[in-house]
Amino acid sequence: MPVNILPQKPPPPPAKKKIKVSWMTVVFIIILTIILIILGERFLVDLNRWANPAYYQYGGDYSYTTTMITPTKNYSQGQYETSRLLIHAAFILPVLLAALLLYFLQYYKKERTPKSIVALPYFIFALWMILHLVLEAFYILIDQLKEAGVYIVLIVLAVVLTWLVMFIQKKIHEKKLTNL
Image 1 (cartoon, one colour):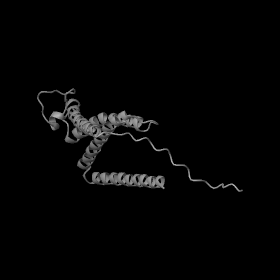
Image 2 (cartoon, helix red, strand yellow):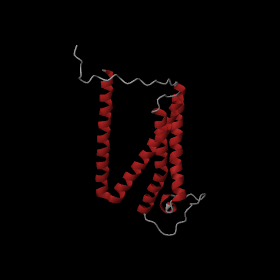
Image 3 (cartoon, one colour):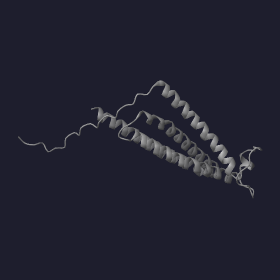
Image 4 (cartoon, one colour):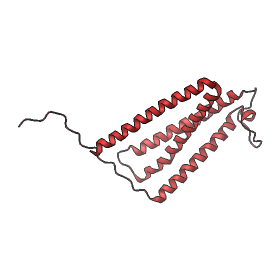
């Protein structure tokens, strides 16, 4: 009998073990996520107040705190906004990298444990912080570059949304193929 040399359909990958999550765990995860977001936003405000030399000139006036850096010259509004963005990026980017590392270590291990659900609020928190940073950068681009800033923001949004549509379509197509 002749042997079939045509490529055969590969066997489906083994299904990952689903972890049962109680409703109480979901409530606590939602509360933890909200607390992390509030904590992060508050820390960004305090970090800007502590490290930005132009904070008292443009950002606000809290007489009960002092900055770590004493202003030695007059700053423009643009310089204040740019230094605020850089200060926020210095906090948000390491937080994002740590949360991504935690998330991938928990969710892409071979064996998932019930404790891996704890990584989800930190990942959502990191996504919220990076969204905050991106929107702040878009605001500065539009504010400082007026006409060119609008084009830059719209082009970046078009690229991101195009990638997102392609990614979602790929996932849906893969899901349909595995269900066959």
